[in-house]
Image (tube, rainbow, N blue to C red; front, side, top):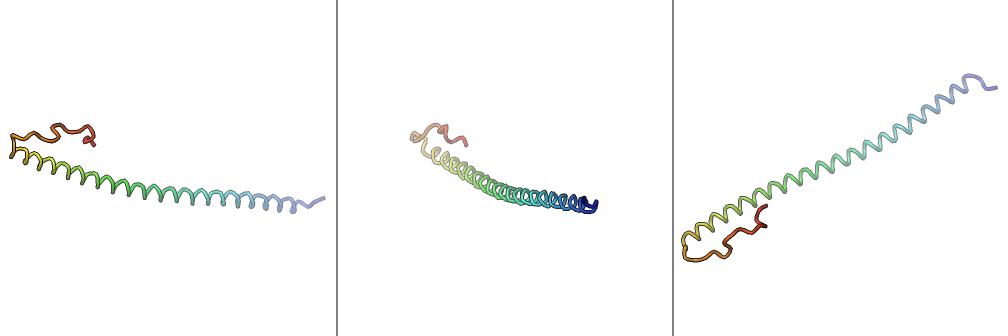
Length: 91
């Protein structure tokens, strides 16, 4: 017959092993989550940069349209090459 201390010892070893497995799984999940958060941060930074570039492009387009309006006003007898804006211009 086993002594009570041996079975208690086995229970402690089993619990320690169970906790070790749980800790390992938690550590892996944490590493995965951190990587995904880093990826998300990078994607957010890229999105912000693209949004700023889009805003700059819209300003450039608006400035070019103003310049075109000025030129068309100087030559009212000429028909514009593109009298109406293209549906693709609505970004």
